[in-house]
Amino acid sequence: HSILASTTAAWGYGVTGPSSSYSGRNLLGVEWVLPSGEILELGSSGAGSGWFTPDGPGPSLRGIMRGFQGSFGGLGVFTKCAVKLYKWEGRDRWKVNGASPTYLLDELPPRMAMNVLAFPTKQAMKDAGYKLGEAEIEYANFRTPMFFAAMAMTENNGQLKLALESGIFQKVMQYTVVDAVVARSDGEFAWKMRVLKEILRETGGVRVPMNIKITPKALAIAGPLLRRVKDPLAPLRRFPILQDLVSR
Image (cartoon, rainbow, N blue to C red):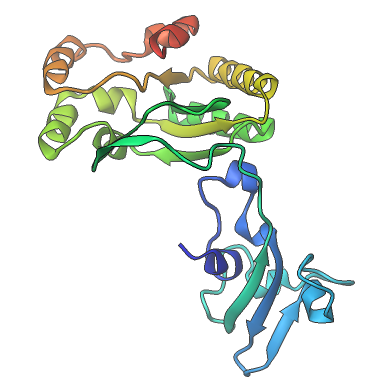
């Protein structure tokens, strides 16, 4: 992944978009080689004043330079850029064990939560997405298709086949979002988690337990038991307090 490319020329929205915005908005200056061969610097760097702002007096040229999605090199080559940085509140070292494809954290750092959010309908997932964005409580999020969720929670092709044949993932993980909540203090973290729970209550979302190990035996038992159950997560939607109990 190229920071220069995503900021200046191509796409630019990643999983940390909820906290760090869109890459084009984080541009603080650029060195641009035009198709004519002329070198153009935008913003304060073009005036010899350092790389601290991408715009000067008058209209901004960033819209011409990249627009929404970028020109993919069609308007020249970008050889240098300055990018706004965001402070990371987590650890700089992670204690991880295991081997591919299963890596496990020894412990989740304080003031940090990883959540798998499952919704009953596509509209509920969309509504929750807007509410989470407006509340500004997430560090990162990304949409997780059902197949990817099943692949991430199983250890080999055989288990993946059993998981899909059980029908459980098609019911539970059809409309899911993975999100990360990171805070600077205990009070901020507690507030963000309260807001998340309220949004889930309003939209029928559920925090799917991440501490349950998926095994072939469990799939063989749960599949037939849940075959006639339309929504296996219904008890958790109806009684949100249960989500805290099963997630411990």
